[in-house]
Image (cartoon, rainbow, N blue to C red; front, top):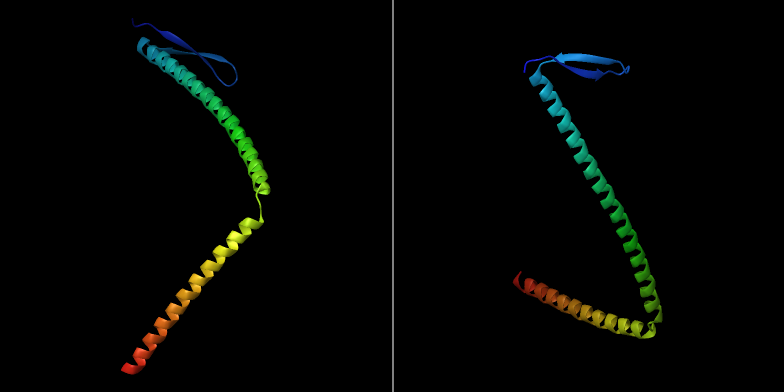
Length: 124
């Protein structure tokens, strides 16, 4: 099948031109054109899936945001209903215990420091 095949080309001025090709070249050109169309269809499908996923992501983000807002309001309501004085009393007791522990550890440190200084004076 060695015949002359003509391919219709349209340039930027919308003029039609024909190019003479042999059978193998025309088959290769048709195959490349079909592969390009197939790739475009795959891209369109992937882009459509991407748009659907992004839309779903946006919806889920809005639901999450509204859920977080609702939880914050519930937490603030619960926090406002809790008694304040008992919490502050517990905090002050804990703070006092921490201060006592710090003072005792500071005293121990100072005692050890003074004993080391005394030993150094005895030695030298």
